[in-house]
Image (cartoon, rainbow, N blue to C red; front, side, top):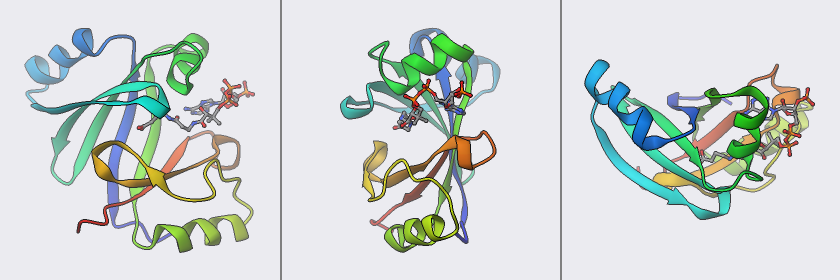
Length: 136
Ligand code: CMX
């Protein structure tokens, strides 16, 4: 995949309003964007640390991926996202190496990135996201 860096770490929380003060007042980071991703049934809040972001994820629907995750496992790290170049080809490559794809084609995620997920059952338990910033 040759990722260039960790684009973000996704953290599932019950409430953005309750979690944001920890990141701002304790860690001293600044929330610079809150965005709803309707098709993923989440509201997201973003913080930057160097090149990497923390993405807080609040579910907007108990049947959505984050709603189900919190119900089953509670709050905590939900996924890890790697920045790649040429996402289409990287997905083909992952599949050819036996990785189970959740998204066989890139789709639009938060912050205008092209994204695709790999299934945690074929990535040693970590839901893995590949993303590409086409504006770069
Ligand atoms: N990390 C690790 N394992 C996970 C997981 C996660 N985030 N989410 C689910 N799983 C595991 C479950 O624990 C379960 O394992 P067991 O069978 O051993 O109990 C298995 O995967 C199936 O879980 P499920 O609750 O039945 O959920 P589904 O199969 O319906 O969906 C998944 C799981 C990963 C396919 C789905 O959550 C998905 O498509 N995720 C990608 C999209 C996403 O997460 N969007 C939210 C973020 C959006 C954004 O960043 O903008």
